[in-house]
Image (tube, rainbow, N blue to C red; front, side, top):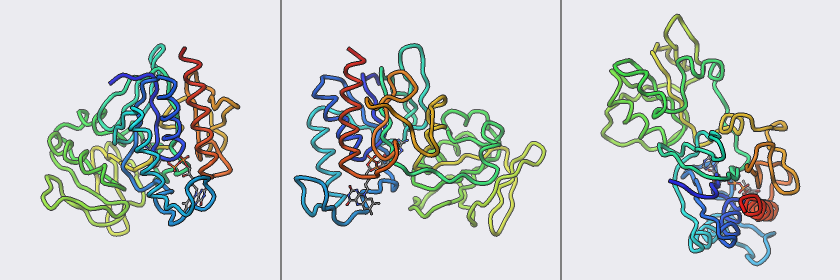
Length: 281
Ligand SMILES: Cc1cc2nc3c(=O)[nH]c(=O)nc-3n(C[C@H](O)[C@H](O)[C@H](O)COP(=O)(O)OP(=O)(O)OC[C@H]3O[C@@H](n4cnc5c(N)ncnc54)[C@H](O)[C@@H]3O)c2cc1C
């Protein structure tokens, strides 16, 4: 799939950016993960957004999204997992699809995944965040899937077709299908340890060895999403045009820092779209 602008996120910053980008005639794809990390979904009543008195977070997001879709933004309901520059374009892995775009807006909010002890050091050495990218290396082997959301189910099904054994660990409650080609493992993952050529998954009740471990969460830290992206603590520094340190990559909303407010997110999404349109001219 190709577009001028890929927007990563599904909050006020993303929908505002999508709307203005469409008005500037850019082709727009919004990677909107269907996940529970959307903070605004939980707000019962918002009283400080002009024109929408006493609106719930859910209703506000529905209205924002509908308006952006009616303006022609295309929505892909999957988590953006990795963005890679390739010449003048960016290739983004969204779910299991690659989206090519000329520019990218990061609007993923402020939620940051908390990694397991041992996880970061073992990435690429038996631990992976992407079944599609790395599954083939574990053909005929034993793997564990550690998942904090429903996104892990499809990955576990995919891995079950390749691997000799797949154990599924839940890191946060989510519904699982009744029929599963993988085994549900009890215990909550607490730590990963390398032991010779195996990875040990330690829980509060067990310690099991696997050839590979796949971990799925509803959020990706900005540094992992886009290598080379400059950060200030947990936030993405931007200039007044919402530009990051990378060419044609902008950021908007809570991910750029305080104040964490809807009106600020909407304003920054608008600026990011205008900047992208100017730079892509
Ligand atoms: C309970 C509560 C009440 C609040 N009340 C108010 C209020 O009254 N007024 C006010 O101004 N603010 C309020 N806020 C703050 C407000 O919700 C945030 O400032 C605002 O939602 C930020 O918008 P955003 O677009 O930057 O990010 P978010 O709204 O956090 O949206 C980001 C979205 O991107 C998605 N996402 C993340 N990573 C990826 C990825 N890699 N790929 C695809 N999608 C991804 C997430 O699932 C999420 O849905 C409240 C927050 C909470 C939690």
